[in-house]
Structure formats: C-alpha cells, structure tokens
Length: 287
Image (cartoon, rainbow, N blue to C red; front, side, top):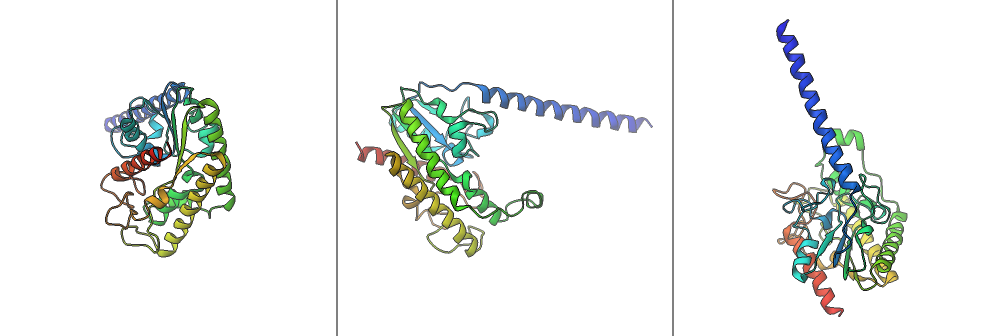
C-alpha cells in the first residue's frame, strides 16, 4: 500500500539523517582530538570534570565537545583573577593516565599544552581513576534500569588504585616541571560531597554508602597530598577546606543527586569559586 511505502521512506530518511548527524559529530570529535594544543599559555589547567566546570556555564570556546568544559570552571575564574592567559586542558571523564599519555576519545596528553611560558599549572584529578563520583551517582539510584543492567554494581575500589594515582601525579608534576621550569605547580584535591559523618536526605544515599564514598574521598585526598609532598608541589586540600560545605550543608559547594542546574555530585558555581579562591590564597601565602 501507498501508506506503507511512505512510512518506509520516512523511516529510511530518518535513519539516514541520524546516521549523518552521528557521523558529523564523530568527525568533529576526531578533528578536535588531533588538534595540537597551544603551548604559549601562562597558566595551564589539567584534570577531570571537577576542574572542567561541567554544567557551570557556556561551553569554553574551542574546547573539545567530549570534555564538556565550561567558562565557569575554577581555571577560568582563577585565570581572570590572576590576569594570566589560560590554556585549559581539563576534560570530563579523564584520568591521570589521560593527563600523562592521552587516549581519551582521540585526545592527546593534557601535559602537551605545557610550554616554557607557563608560570602556573593546576591539577585536579584522580576521581575517575577510582570511580568516586560514578559510585555516588549509582548509590543514589540516579541511573536508569538500562545502566544498572549494562554496568551493574560498581566494583569495590582496589587499594592499589590510590597508589597508582599518587605515582601518576608525581610523574605529572615532574614532567610539568621539566617543560616549564619556572611554573608553580598546584595539586588541588576534590571538594567533598559528603558530610563529616552519616548521610542526609539531600544526598539520597544510605549511611553505609556514604561511609564508603567518604572513605574513597579521604583516601583520594591522601593520595594527592602524598604526591604533592613527594614531588614538592603546592597542595590545596579542598577535602578539608570544603568539609563544612558538602551536599548536606546549608551552604553547599557540591550539587546533590538531582540539581536544578549543573551536574549531580559536581561543584556548583560557589564551589568552583571556592577552589579558585583557595588556590589564589595558597599561592599568595607561598610567595
């Protein structure tokens, strides 16, 4: 019948349009990934989504789509405050391995942006190495049934993963220092999502799940602190500085599981500003 032929034609056309759009996006991702980074920046920021400012404003001009990098992340706030030219290499979903060796969706090493002109390098990473935020989102049940079926329950964190984070961070700092001998290098830990003890309705997770996530966050901060000590980098302990600003607090720096704006269990605008302020204060004290 004519209507069946018309329906098939519409379906085929729709499939072709979707395939073309997917192909176009993939081409953009590949082209962006192969682009060589600018190495003239006075300030180079590296790290994961906590630094990239995911969900905090306009897409950072020229940045890879896969990184979900915004102009509301703490690197942009800090660069404006210090009047430094910024090359922001932060990328949502990245690990310490990606900073060192690349491999994230065709992207090269984040370290490749560091040149001799750099006077400041900041690094906030490690959460994706241990599945920290993914575990929180899963525990809050803010994942679909399909995600549960395909991914299943997150495995427990291997204690060796924290040692790997420390080792990789030391390698990152040493390589950054080799490329930019005059740069001040800052390791900033993650602002905590959890209260010092227990849970609360705003978190949407059990006390047991909160305790496990808190333990992972504390160990990640300790791994970062150890790396800073071993590599003689400046350490900004947002895990301590933000202890009273978790999701359960009256003045949270981190979103809960279902925020009206932003991304679950990631910094809000106040949290990004707090990290920028803490790094600035630490730089001022260490002069």
